[in-house]
Length: 230
Image (cartoon, rainbow, N blue to C red; front, side, top):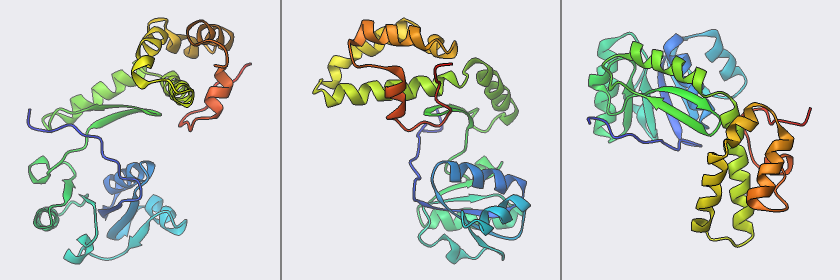
């Protein structure tokens, strides 16, 4: 296995994208979704990058890349169509021991970006180690059909349950069988069916009093719409 799979926490980390075209725009949006502080360096940019800059969501430098742009940067993505510039970005990042990805050029990357299925806190990453991005894209589309938005709500609910159990001085190891039972009893399918009454009945059966779906969901951050009683 060539690559070491890892999920990076880049919240409030300064990340640089060199290149303001369509590829660079996609990289910028993903970085912002993950809470990064994004700097874009490019003489020309898309309307979307211009919009993000005008809203103050990113810092935009409308000029060519300079080696000093790498100063104080946690992660850099090269998204230009200039092979020489891409090599310069990579070389500078290597000297600084920095995380570096050059779009569609795995040979000059120290990490590659997988295809992603994102369902709230559920993140499924697909990588072919750079051998076939087209197949990774196909796998992503297949998995998007299999894993719907109910999985985001499911994990939000499980997080709410875990938080409540810990607040009641339960030992984390003691929770294991409770969560296993909820999973075995197809809680995620009840969420998919929007059957709130059945969800609350299952929560009471396994967890006891005080575990109400709407209350548990309301107390947790969520990346998708929370189900409500119809």
